Image (cartoon, rainbow, N blue to C red; front, top):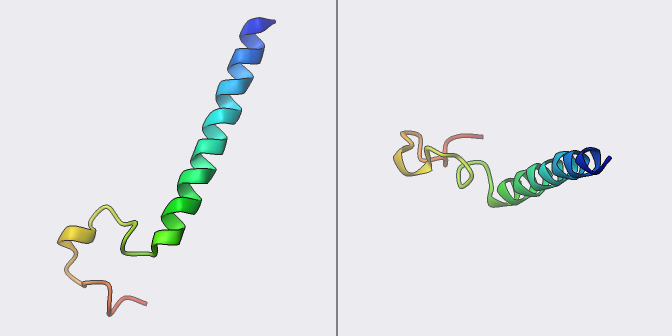
Length: 48
């Protein structure tokens, strides 16, 4: 019983963290959240 509660809390905790991370990255903008932003060839100004 306790294992089920802990396992459920882990699942919901990870889902909440994933949603939080997605919202945080979406607020940064397309290029700021990109992992290649420092080495980007397009410089993101021409990308719509």
